[in-house]
Image 1 (cartoon, helix red, strand yellow):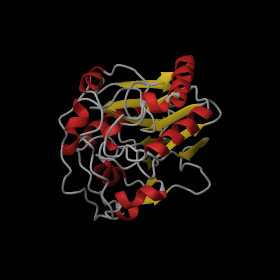
Image 2 (image 1 turned 90 degrees about the vertical axis):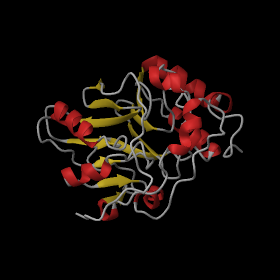
Image 3 (image 1 turned 45 degrees about the horizontal axis):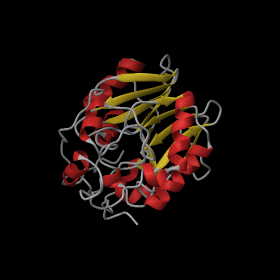
Length: 281
């Protein structure tokens, strides 16, 4: 276990929250979504066993809350078999170092995301000029420096399997970040979309606060490749998922998901892509 892990020097608590913060939703018997401030983490596994995985790692300074949520679902002193990261933005890796030290588990991410997770490369600066609301305007305060997980982070297997998540495949869904992945289980259509698409207009403070459900593209202020982002949504829509949990917003299920995701895919440029911003091409 590499002890020389560290966050970037710009890592800090972000004073943002929503009405859903601190609540969890069981989407399927083995799929649980928990909201940390404005972002979701996901616990995948039978709650009657200690065989489960954590997907994403919340906001900065949220480790104790995440540990408490995990133990509430799986029992005292329970620990996941692995941590899977959809990508490495600050709100998805915010507590990962504390969790790795506590649980002594491996972290997995796409190989293109590893530079941002091993101290080699910062993310592009957020875009406060992008079309959107107050959260977009606040985005320059968000951390972008890489964290360093050292040898605790490993690339996802090249064959598309997901460590410790039987039945799931990872799907490369870039656009929001170069190595963004989504996780899909074909047997029941369960999709963990990360930020490839979300179910709240993440740029607008009021909608984030109230968690008003509305399918949308990836958060605009941190998305740098809109062509790839569109292709990723088309790829996920073609899977015809029956249940989707996303990095931001409430889970979406059944016909509502089918209709809204199809609409997003068919009208991505109008619904998701901003009219202006420094990364809009």
